[in-house]
Image (tube, rainbow, N blue to C red; front, top):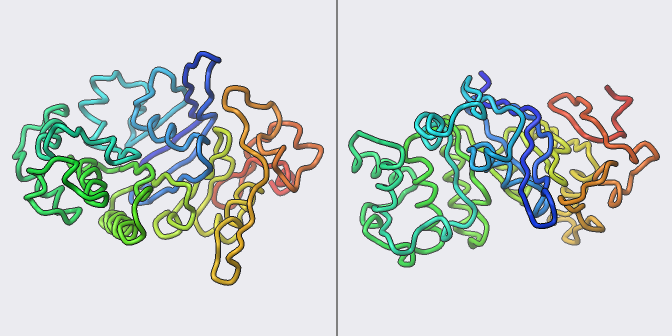
Length: 311
């Protein structure tokens, strides 16, 4: 059963230099219980995509987002906040410490979420359930954020996202700035949540992390999703030259000298009318001077003229 369908999603920011086209014409689908990974370089639109799905940028977002049979971009803000946000879709924001208020205890911050979303049940019970789900003890509730380690803060933020038992959780760089041991704990936690039937979106620049969790993967570049498909297809038979470059940049035991992609991504203030990867692509052809449409693959699509004849 389809849980989430995104069609032609675009989001822009206003700036002194003009509009920033952070997300441009993104499409994908996700079934109940599936997880999706979103990967790409910094400033490619990954976080903006997550924020758009939870309608934190609704004034500058267009397209369609169908979640649990609701067209959420067409809902008014109060209805979305009461019925969808945090109850059905929640988000683990990038940078745990920035998500926690330093002057309030952890318990007070949990209570604020419940108040904001008009929870009228047993507050203590639901908070303890969320804490137990991330292996945190009750005494943590009395502490302030600065009294917790980086891993504990990250688990608190995840517990907050799980508080109202949503169907879909967006996790934006949940393992960034954590040591390897804590990263492994967070990844195991996310795998456990997925095993329990929760749908996840994991946003990261680390394709190695995605390989452990994601059923489907979307590769972002220059605000576009240049390739989307099953995890198996993306890792074993990547289509887009950018996806291939990302995978080749991962060190392996047999070759610890990774390759790198020359050049820099295009400015989201002034996007080219040609293929956005053209200037960095080692496989470009004459046709690449035009912006490629989406060509179907067995499990998704790819934006690359090299696959025009395949479809």
